[in-house]
Length: 192
Image (tube, rainbow, N blue to C red; front, side):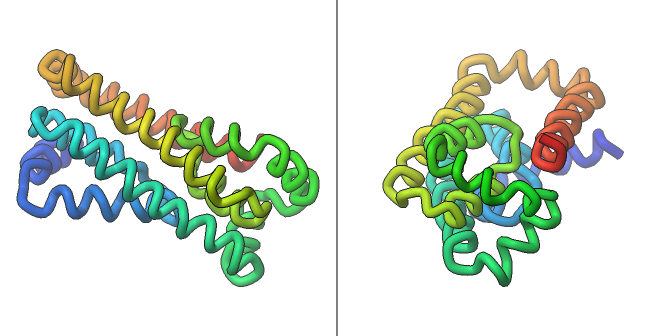
């Protein structure tokens, strides 16, 4: 089943609507969606190596646009939307302390979350709740998301064929590692 899903993704990655779907996933991942755009970016760059930089730029810009939606949710819709999300992740007990720390170190939170498997939407919403200055938030988001997506695209651009062979030969291992990182990011949100 995993092989069929991979083959379908690879065939879809070079299709005419692939960029639109990638941009949409990148946008919603920064504010509400739990699945990172790397799941589409990787096969798309592998399938169309010449488009690596354009796809990384698309991911970066749509991710930052989605991050602004997350910021707006936190800033404008705290009680209606953001508070239930924070309650779901178990952050309400420590919220005031978190807000104080966030106001001091917010730039770094945004930068670190932007390049790691940590769920970025938590930081975008927290930025709005804490009132992190919008220019700081936008700059940190552009920098961190740009580093993340251009790094992935660069690796695949320069080392694409061997990486593709590795992924195709060890699809189960790659999927397992990805899931461990994804679940680990959610674990950090919930328990750290």
